[in-house]
Figure: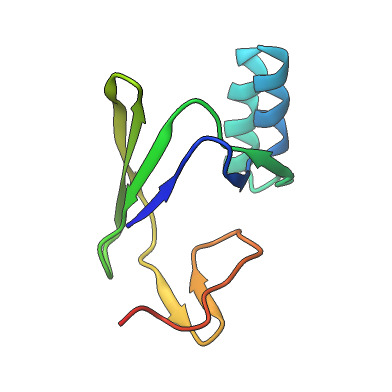
Length: 105
């Protein structure tokens, strides 16, 4: 389980950041295509607007992502992904520059 409050440091695809800043949804949509092609940059960003609660069961091929606003649950989705693999210096899949010092027990 992980949580991300507004103001937390994160990384977002550069085109997504540009689309949010410009208010241009077409650029945001283009960002999804670039990610699918494996072409993206991940500049630093700041999480905004919602609180994210992410649940990833061990060895699961999915995460459940719930987004909360002042009025309660705003929306949620299931993200299908490879199971997390723990290594001595961290885990995958992660694009974070921060790592865990040891796997959870």
